[in-house]
Length: 183
Image (cartoon, rainbow, N blue to C red; front, side, top):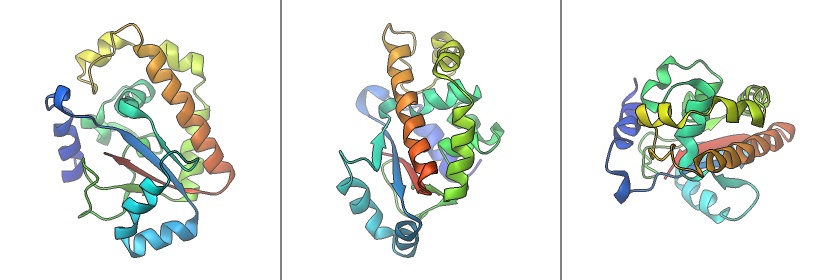
């Protein structure tokens, strides 16, 4: 497990009442990605200038729940998940290891990797996703924020999964790269 993965995995075990870990996805052109990789200091401004715009989404606190429903593993076990699904949270590429977005650095996917991950996401229908959802197992596994047995939790995570699928499908269709981070 990389030190960054360990850091994130340990962060999810902290008191969740006092924190909020939001998963973000930013679509970029290849040129924009090259600019960010050559000067990572522009990433934070670029990401948050997009807030409320079509190229940035947040899936709120459902990032680990979606990952668990798709893979059967939490963040602490991400090394057991095969790419491209593992890339949903942490790709093989770090933007800048020294840049912290609150819960570690940002990661990026090249356009070809966005397409690969999109193909995997398309294999899971919304009904399949709902059928895989098990709030009891998720809470037992400590999936952040451990609210998955509450009445609205299935709807909450499914809505964000649907949003994520559409976001990735648009990115793949338009040849975008993707940056992911937890803040």
